[in-house]
Image (cartoon, rainbow, N blue to C red; front, side, top):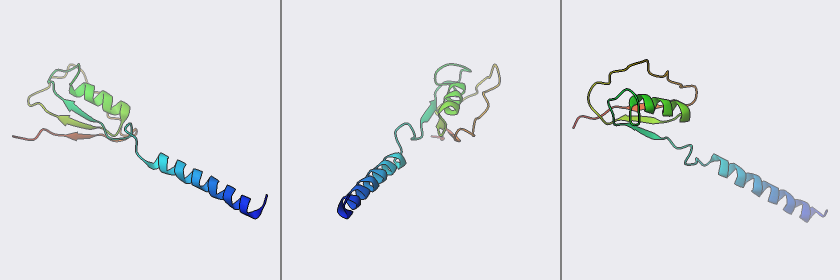
Length: 96
């Protein structure tokens, strides 16, 4: 190959590598923090604290927002937090 072809080939490979690095560095929707909202005072089921903890442990990096006021009576222990996945954050309900 001529020197010009070698340079063009190297420049093409460099451009491809830089494009790949840029694509991988950009956060995807799957990597964005997920907000889970507690809407039920029940122990189990959709919108419960238990449900939010289980989902947060599975996806990691989630925010749990409590949107109800009252007491949750637990029938069994809540699932342990799994911060080794990616920590999640609990956002308490704000007084109106």
